[in-house]
Image (cartoon, rainbow, N blue to C red):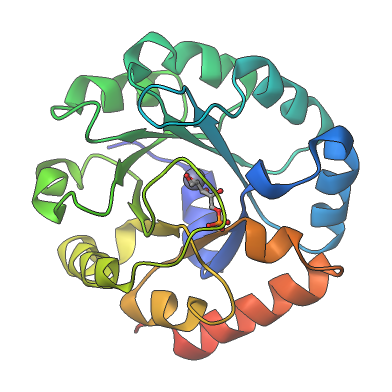
Length: 232
Ligand code: DX5
Ligand code: ZN
């Protein structure tokens, strides 16, 4: 069993907003991170896209490494890449604390989960909206996080697919209190309550957050709504 003080701390503090930097101003990434720290963010969600697994390209290892140099916040790295096995070590060396791979790219992920743990990071599995919970069920006990996509990955600013909430509920039933169930895509003030009620603990927010003038106010409001609706 992989012991992670970071994951224990995140489980204790949940529900928590995880800002997705995809929607930030990359010309001022250090300032954006400073504003998020001042706003009370407890984690940063980094969306890595390869233009192959998803039809978009975002950023890669050097950018994760640069972000690591300017913050001590935990880095939750979401790998939307076709060949995660080839890059796990380099993303870990760049500073990832949690490494999440898509089950669609690694249908039998045991060895990759073990490798992530051996590298000293917490391991996550991610499911696209059409992928059933059955695909990750055999591995849920081995990983620390399951990321439920509530949009097809590749782009920020899409509409929330509420049909995925049943997957969040099912994962919480399967894994109970030990798993960080995270939800990603279209999470905003309208949808966050339902996410928390279903049992999501990390609430990834990109465009809804970065379109706000006051990140602190938004994070506080989102957290409050999640706490008010949170599953037992
Ligand atoms: C989508 C990414 C998300 C995205 C969320 O492919 O995984 O993290 O940035 O963005 P919003 O919150 O705008 O849906
Ligand atoms: Zn993401």
